[in-house]
Every structure is written in structure tokens, then in C-alpha cells.
Image (tube, rainbow, N blue to C red):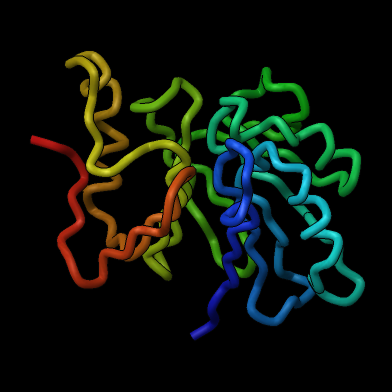
Length: 193
């Protein structure tokens, strides 16, 4: 079984920032897509990336995927673009720097695995989750689980996304804030009743 490497580059940050996940393939092959999920607001992320071995003849960062456009997730984007010139993916194409639009159901290669984009608006209109079926991994941005909706309209708007998530095996959730949630030994709850 091939395992991707997932590193949280802001877990020791002293600033208010989102988690910034850097994903590499296990062997740094030329086909692996070095990916940042969110960029946060801590400039030390750039130093950490510069110091990392990301594969001979490979770019440090091939792509950035923005889970949503709140400042704690995107403030460093201009500096990341200047330092690494990656492709920038996001649901919100009006966010400065985003040059590749994401849509619900899109598939993206991250590291050496394929991920599905799931658009869900429980946190913000442009929020997405990224799901890897092969490993049961979900990058959730600021969509918290179990999901609570402020009103019936939001719940109705997200019924399709919820139905798609409901049928998936999710073993770990990498959220925008806090530690990784491991569901191997306890029941995963999608929504509050």
C-alpha cells in the first residue's frame, strides 16, 4: 500500500492561522503532485517549505488548494505565489490568485492519490472538502463534524453533499483547525440530529 505523507506546517505556529497541510507522495516521484491545502497566515511556512526535500528535479509546491477564502486560510497566498508559482485551485474564482476553478465532483491528484471535491456550504458559501476514497481521508477545511446547520434552508441546500459524504468510509479528518480526528475506533457522525 502506497502512503502519502501529510505534514501540518503550522502545528507549532504562535500566530492565529489555519492548519496548512503539505502533501507529498511517499517516494517523491515525478508523477506526485506536491500540494498545499490552504496557506494560512504564518510566513514561517515558506521557510519550512524551502528547507524540505520534495524530490529531485521537482518543484517544491506544484499546487495549492484553498478550502475557503477566510483570511486565516489565505493570507499568505501572495507570498506563496511569489516564492513557488504554483497552480492555485479554489471554489471562489474571485479570490485574488485563484487561477483554476473547482467544482463539486471534480477529481484532483494530491501527492500520489486522487481526491474528490465536495462543495458544502455549512461554514461559508465557497467551502469545500477533499476526499480520498482509497485511504478514507477527508480534508474538511472549517466544515466541522458532526455538521450543524443554522437553519433548514442551509440544511436543504447541502442535502446532496451530505448524501454523498454519508456513503463514504472516513477514517481520518484533517480539519482547518485542531488535531486530526481519527475514526478507526469510534463511530463517525455526519450530522447532529
